[in-house]
Image (cartoon, rainbow, N blue to C red):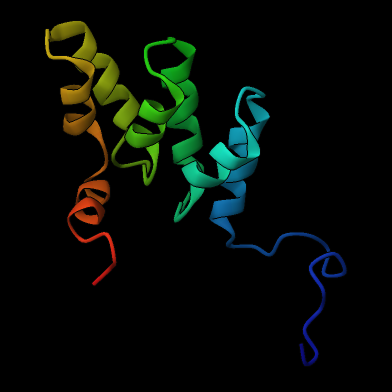
Length: 117
């Protein structure tokens, strides 16, 4: 590792590690396993997926896999939790339809191209 400091010796997590910030925020809620937090925060650019997950779980409306589907890849601009919570109170659509409506656009793109560009 040619002159690179070991993570433990470098003073902690380097700046610009949004996936780890998201992971820590998800675990801070206490009800999320490390595995679920890692899945939720994979590819995260901020702690938005963790905040989204905590908001929809606080209401008890979604199972963990559904909340993961809704919140993974969330950004501050998307706010899928607000979309879901508003749609749930003003629509008779089932939760599967609401998840499809409100999940971040990148999630749809990844579903269409699961192996990348």
